[in-house]
Image (tube, rainbow, N blue to C red; front, side, top):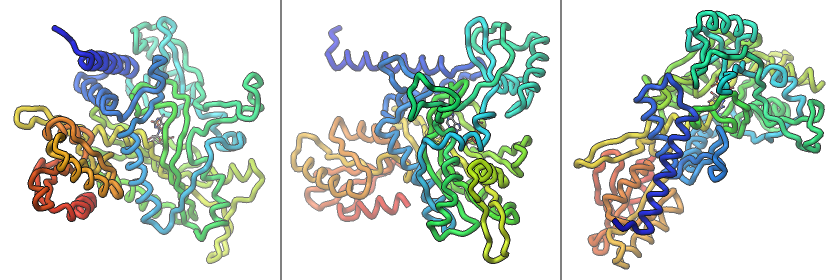
Length: 498
Ligand code: ATP
């Protein structure tokens, strides 16, 4: 058999993709994974690579653990999720304003917030194969709730397992496991000082969460805008955590994006506003295509000493084998502003003109991971169907989230009059929508390519279009075609997206 250059390239690419999937599975695979779950995540990982949604970072150097890059369609999807969040959190509300604070902040910020001293996970190591594990996660497997538990408690519980011979390495099965120790999640940098002189005195941190910047800009926001209590400040941005283990594709990474909103209020309003935000956030998920059964509330039983209530929204990931946190909604008391006031010496109290009260505002937050939501929407939307005996992969995303909204095709590539007309339609539509022009292969194949990336509408220019300026518009979900005029396309798409 003679293999052409294109086939060879394809074969090499296929090998790389297969290698990449195996590599990732080894990275985040665990013995407890079921076959369905492994298949589900394998499909999503290889799909993300093949269609340019997500790539492992620094692949040509062998990859870089728990860091990922977002390709063309990935950026588009991520931006659309971010915009959907921003629209509901800021644009459609009177009581929330925006912020984009820096990643680097004065190091005292993280001393005041408690991160420098206690933002850590309990780490245990296998002495035989050197695998690293999170002790709290191991204990959870045996029904011991150890989330944010003190190290002493964790070590006592680990010893009980050790005595029963149940404390084994997740990778090699060895029982030679170290006791738990503190593993700080803070990522350090030497900004402003030479690397070789990096010490606890001159270290700066890459922020582990975006809300730190919001607390520091609370006063400037209050002084420069017309907001009064209760009000929120929202921001989207990168956060960095030196996660002990990060093995679940983009679910848990060391560099990620958060979408956070901190709501400042008088403590007497906490209960009401907390319920308001819980309700608003829950409805947001339903509005963007999640079903009630896909989601559940997880109430935190152990609360930080300053917190009065904490719930997470969890999504039932097919690809990760069950419900996992995508967003936290927490009532944090006045801890944050009190601490920053104490450490900076700046008065961050608020004077209420109506009640003539002065107090440090209390805060409730909604804190969501953009990358986790990305995985959540893909997990929900990825479908394989059989159409006329052929497999079709389709991303049934909410149309507003789809990376590309319209694809335009000339029926035949070798008929300049069809190509020109299609190109004109494309140039016109792209001013308002993310569009793609495709004249490669037969129309059926072009539909499949667009279904895979979740494009809601495909417009085809055929011979009838030359006569009466009409086109066919094909719907991703129903696969039905409709004939409309060229003039109607933009409105048709706009309506469909709303
Ligand atoms: P987890 O228990 O999963 O580690 P967390 O409770 O520490 O999360 P928060 O500090 O409340 O998370 O952060 C808010 C949100 O940020 C989380 O709900 C999640 O969506 C996202 N997030 C947190 N850590 C990561 C990470 N390492 N990678 C991706 N997203 C993350």
